Image (cartoon, rainbow, N blue to C red; front, side, top):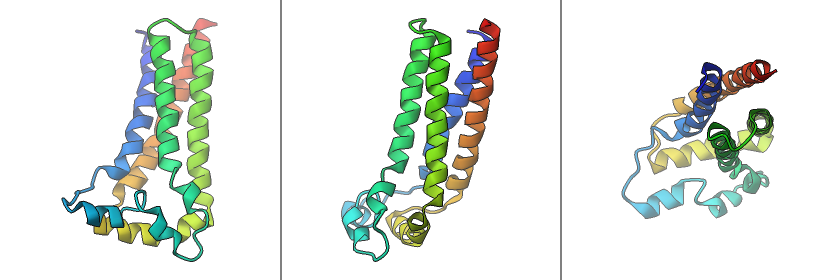
Length: 162
């Protein structure tokens, strides 16, 4: 495998790891009822009763959509590594998917409802056993770094073939 392809793959791995960082510091309790009642992604009905959170049904899917986008990018990357696809086509597909993931993250941060529900989410997450929020900032920075690295790798791969 060429160094430029490895740079590209490293960027993809950084993006995938960034999606899991916010969840690293969970200490799950063994009381499943308490966790279900507290963890916001599992108990949307409870949060829907809070006034001013009409967009919650959409916002809850953001982490999952990001994860799916990156997994699709990895599948396309796998086809490239095994020689079943042209690297240029895969580079375009993966770069578009990663740009969509980044844009989605930025849009999610711009939603006022998302900010309004942050306090409720934090309180519920702590009840469920979450001990810190450092993973969110680190994950976001790693996501940006992964996108930059993979785009640079993509450009290097394209210029090498030209």
